[in-house]
Image (cartoon, rainbow, N blue to C red; front, side, top):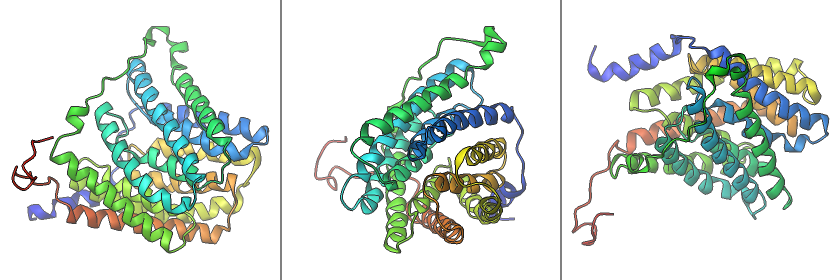
Length: 358
């Protein structure tokens, strides 16, 4: 088989290969508890309107999956702060005029910033996915000026709880506890003058195009297209990005079928809905590091259930939008991958107007 077929072989294997377990049950349990407790507390207090902010703060638990306690806590502290900033930025955009259009350029720039930050701090999972997702959802949720204070406080409290849950294991084995180690950012490496410019350009172009098309078509969740573009572009190389895009589409197609059943039989409000969300979070984390397409069987109904908890929508249109916007975002990103080269050419002093290199 020709070398040019290697990416296609990688895509095929990625759909049917199940990676090693590597303690995924511990990560899944931490993530499930981190989501369950804040959301359940808000539901019992009658403040379901605040659940999106708590949910994205809880995503702090998803970082540093298999890292030692000290490294994981440092990574989660930085990532949690970035999530709180994204939530706050989303609330600010929600209050702005024509906010549904403003989401697109701000989200595209946030993706570029998140990509640099992720590379500099060596986040795991890498990329700006959760930052863009948190920002866009909060930007689409109706807000009041008071939420500019309430939202970051709720997100920060949820993130802090995730950090606490991450150290529960030290109660069983006190010797495993260590002082948190804040990572040293390597922005110079992340800002390689050639390769990084190409990758940042891809984020800006892909998210702008996918978000603009979805918004212009009047779809209710245009950020799903933007998130799908982020998923494709977050891979380390062309083959993995192509595989990720294929997994996103195939996994979402199957996940929509699962979501149709879950949304039909499960409660859409109250404590029952929160337990369903937490259970789906656990199942998603059990497989996301082993087979992304398989994990999307649970990620898809999870995302839809979280939305239903805040603002219920007709199930049929919800499923249709999820599938169409995911395909749109993935296709746009894969086209951008083909159009924008991996490394942009250097400009000579003459072509740059005689200026010195930046």
